[in-house]
Amino acid sequence: MNKEPEKIACEVCKKLIPRDAAITYEGMDYTLHFCDIKCLDYWKEEQKKKTEGKGD
Ligand SMILES: [Zn+2]
Image 1 (cartoon, rainbow, N blue to C red):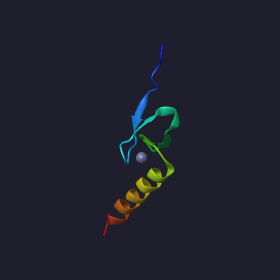
Image 2 (image 1 turned 135 degrees about the horizontal axis):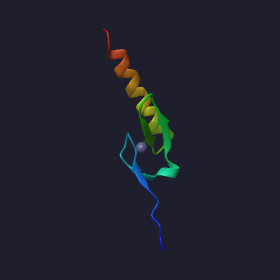
Image 3 (image 1 turned 180 degrees about the vertical axis):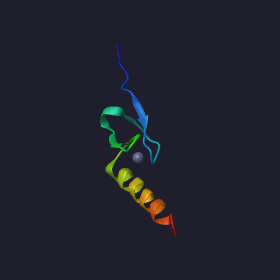
């Protein structure tokens, strides 16, 4: 028997990674998964840009 680990796509680069190995980021009402801390940092930067772009 070989049991495939559940795989999920990284939010940034869409690479498939085993759920156990993913970095999880929990927001207010959502959960995101990243393959790597670099992808998490990239995503955070993108969010910051979006936030800064508002109310200008
Ligand atoms: Zn990634």
